[in-house]
Image 1 (cartoon, rainbow, N blue to C red):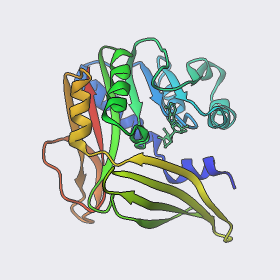
Image 2 (image 1 turned 30 degrees about the vertical axis):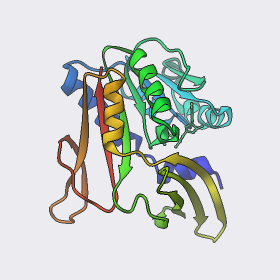
Image 3 (image 1 turned 90 degrees about the vertical axis):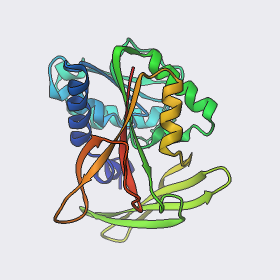
Image 4 (image 1 turned 180 degrees about the vertical axis):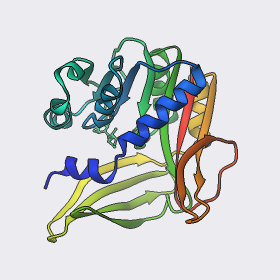
Length: 258
Ligand SMILES: C[S@@+](CC[C@H](N)C(=O)[O-])C[C@H]1O[C@@H](n2cnc3c(N)ncnc32)[C@H](O)[C@@H]1O
């Protein structure tokens, strides 16, 4: 029963994430990205994937929780080669104040930046990211929404050896603040309730994209997922568009170019 191991197995797909950011950066900038900063890094799994991909790659992973960084160090960074370990830095810092060398890419994934509750706070974070990028740097975020995003509900998904439960426990329509939890139950019936807790604001895409523009980003695009013709489900291919679909639940990427 290790909540971080369960999280990595059920929530994250760092291979697809790194495929998306490296291909998109290359398409937009006509060069390969080298330096990547993973904000809200948790166990720093994405940073490990980045340094494993190429000998030139360098990663900074930022989280203000020393315990999750320690877990990432012991379980993810330690399994890299010594040479790869030298190209990754774990920083126990707040993303609002962290100081890093200018970065090609900065990532804020799994909606972690939704914890900023006001426009002022969110713009402050976006401005800090802008200042931390090289002149042709790119900021990658993801977002979720859809008409079920504001509903109080639970969703279960079977994983290998356990069940992942996403719990939208509380939503306040006046502030758009919501309380979400992740619970896990092993196949033997052992429960790990509220393994992760997120109190955050359900931001809309216009709010986020407008704030990124206010923070100085030259171009901000939403990359929407295509549909698999046979299954009618998402096909994991994200392309820039101005027209989405009114799905019950969607996840998309936002790409902000400095
Ligand atoms: C939802 S997890 C994200 C884990 C990982 N990035 C992913 O994609 O799944 C959010 C993480 O953000 C960290 N965090 C929240 N606010 C932060 C802040 N202001 N500065 C740094 N880390 C923060 C928490 O400690 C937690 O580990």
